[in-house]
Image 1 (cartoon, protein in one colour):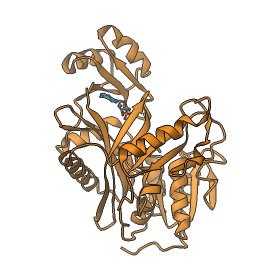
Image 2: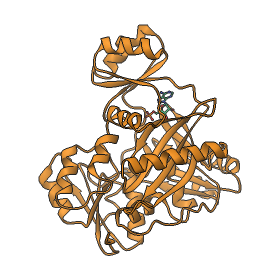
Image 3: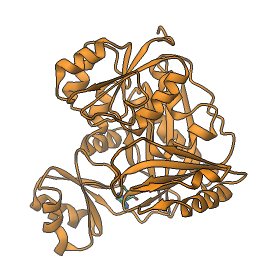
Amino acid sequence: MKPILPGSAIGVLGSGQLGRMFAIAARRMGYRVHTLSPDQDTPTGQVADVEVNAAYEDLDAIAKFASAVSVVTFEFENVPAATAAAAERNAPVRPAGQVLHITQHRLREKTFLARAGLPLTPFRRVASLQDLTSAARELGLPAILKTADFGYDGKGQFRIADASELAQAWRGVGERESVLEAFVDFEREISVVAARGVDGEFVHYGAIENQHRNGILNTSLAPARVTESVTRQAVEITREVLEELAVTGVLCVEFFVCRDGRLLINELAPRPHNSGHFTFDANVTSQFEQQLRSVCALPLGAVTQCSPAAMANLLGDVWAAAAAIPNVKLHLYGKMSPRPGRKMGHLTALANSVDQAHADVQRALSTLVGKA
Ligand code: AMP
């Protein structure tokens, strides 16, 4: 396939911090970046050459946007299928709209994984309170009810401890199509961020260890403190996912590591992932440059990690005195309106060991000023 060369324009659907870091990587390599979203003065738009302000449902605007660029990629996967199709009529879309279609809907994603024979948390489809009651009986409680679409960062999720909470949880998801998942008493959570080139080349960043708070990623440690065998299995499963979906681009697989060492897939993200932000500072090629290389049909870059790393998200209204710690890198996303729980930036600490990097990033966090 013919590479898309520097000087060309890349279109990004979505305008958040993932698009911003993609745009930084792309501009460094001499590409132009166009971004489209319903918002203005966005984290991506501040760095891009062109910021288009339009609804994802405005198919004329999408067609015009796609026809002005050499390839369309995205940083926000919850765009309607018709949006991806409108873009696809005017430019290559990588990963393809079909990948978005599957991964933006929990039921489609889980059904795809189950059909591919990949290990995942036991689940049931729920379309009524009656379904929920029988699903809870089959899977056992506690369990977690999640809306089938448009869920992220623990939004649209309800933990059900016992049968008395079923009706409340059903109201909580807005009585919409949902998935009931068995509650996994995991030992830890890990993810694998990987990229696949247009000709099937595959690279990955190993296992990353993730700690969540209130359903939102709090810290990521790389490498994860797991056995080589767990890392090998996680990478192998990730490779299968990218192959089965024929991804051109970056995809992250989030896993639960069970107490007996078994891995269960929690969910997929068909783009660079928050847990891979450390690659910006710690790796020869970041996950964002890797997305650029794959969607432009360039050879993928070396994934070599130069140092153990720990990343901590900055949530809500905090600002940083952390820039004073020499081995800690500060990233702020240029968001104008902080809200509690909103991802405003992150810190990455590089050190000789992952435990030291973890301690350093925690120390940096404790110097932050604000009301997170
Ligand atoms: P999600 O948005 O589905 O990735 O969920 C956010 C976080 O909630 C996960 O990273 C876990 O920490 C927790 N969680 C989600 N589903 C489950 C589950 N089935 N069992 C245990 N914890 C879960």
